[in-house]
Length: 350
Ligand SMILES: [Fe+2]
Image 1 (cartoon, rainbow, N blue to C red):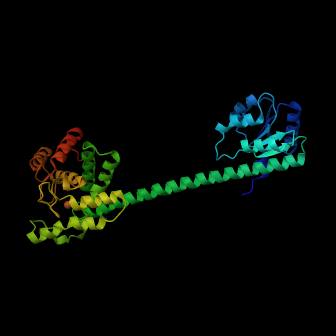
Image 2 (image 1 turned 120 degrees about the horizontal axis):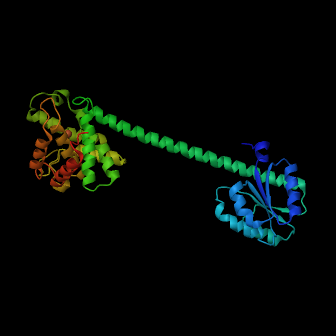
């Protein structure tokens, strides 16, 4: 963590003193000590300009100057010095008065040099302050690197989490749709309906990500029922209906909003507006909006695509079916929003 002699000597030092003789003296002293970037001025009014141009690592400032005192110059500089930058300001005083020293310290000076200078003392103090300055910068830099690393890791974790959810949805659909296209389209349509209904971008995106998990509970349905080519018996249908409860059970109890929404969708996407759906027989607006949205998206997509037991319906026919079921199976407002979405987005199947 040590600062090299080279790095110290390359530091930029700005010296401000109205007395050219004193300025030459201190400048010569610093150069004799090996400092190669010493910038000087006798004009306090030039300090701001020089500060901006040279970005000094340390400022040596005469306290008593006729044009503008050292204290006033510190005030001028304050807006440009950030609290985390640790810029040492050393005040040059010709007097030993405690009062002016205290005043300077209060204003933000970090140290004093009393004229006439003792070259060994000047050198030691300047080196100490510069070492602190550079170590401070190094720590700041490392903090920045750490913050960046933390932020990169956080977004990697977030991506991994989202990808796992996508793959979980695919696993759920794998037995009857090994491409995962149905769940993806349901997500897209559900997002579109959400936006038409006035949901925020963020909430609509949550639905897009959550909707593909609506049939996750099919993982728990035996193949003999899930893949049965013909009509299900009443008992088999009863088992099939349990995919809503199984899905909700897998997804419930999380603080993550996405999983919370997924769980509500898994549980309620087969509820019907008229109260004859399952598993709870919820009715009307008691059914969570996300469940009502995914109900429409799911049925539309299933109707308009080929399934082992049926051909794909044309969009117009599927829309007639949705319209006929508005107020029965579906929330009429959601069907209306979907109709509008479809009119703006073509087939909506992506
Ligand atoms: Fe389902």
